[in-house]
Length: 361
Image (cartoon, rainbow, N blue to C red; front, side):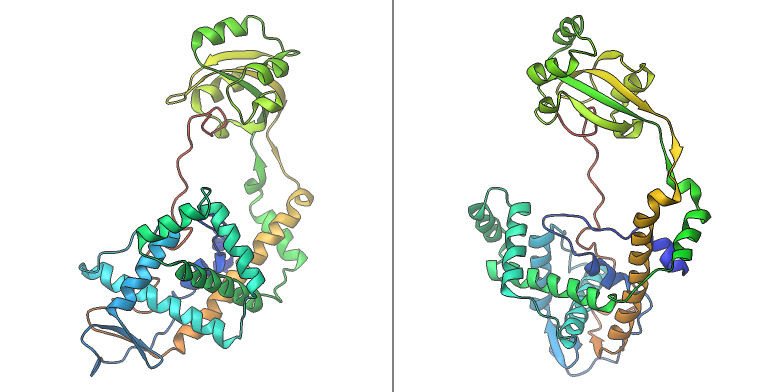
């Protein structure tokens, strides 16, 4: 296992932003760190040219349109093209995306209309819960057409499939999986957890009155009838087994100092809308997961890490083979370096709200 594979183990994952994010897009740019882009002296091209790629000249209006589409699709704040650093980084990001597109076309990757329709519906459901009207209005505000969205969505699907082609034959040896487990066994330590149930009420006085009649045997029934937390009330207030770090501070402190079978509270976390009563249902001590428990998940992680290494090599070759010439005003300081513009899915996760289990109640 290479050093790149080891570091990638903690970073390879997929998630949603405004729509389904395709991991290979982020991988595409990561793969360019060691790329050898061909950069020739600039001559004889239009005044507003940004770069020439494989014989086609891209001008500033092309770059601006690309940035508008990225902002509309992913919520990425467009860099200021009047600032030198922003202008150069934007040009590099745009050029890289075109190289990846060309690689997918050369590999003859296609997307069926049925797959595109399904992805489009998935995008609408995730990004615009208000339906098609909200979608159309939002696009109008951003200055992007529905066709632009569909083209970008199709592009993402092509890149995803190109990644699958490039990494299709990857395997991880059983001894490699075992070695990864034995090298860092502490990574598989599970903190102590407790099964907690909670009841949310409007005020401390109501919580105090309610607590006087609560017992472990009637807690779930009262939670279903009285709790204002609509997400857990139907389950009798059950939060499942949670670690202290998954709970808000005051609620976590009360839950983890209480005995099994003990009702605790009232507790109000800072900024929370409700006051909470809780019940410790059961306790699980800290432990280390066995190799058998984590083997398949670890194998999947290692395959993904090796996939990143393979994809990096593929994209390095693709970019090295591209005939790319930047205009002087847009040329990055290091054209072979990683573009410094945030990619879809690269933004940090939002802070945890103030409900007892880390979600707003």
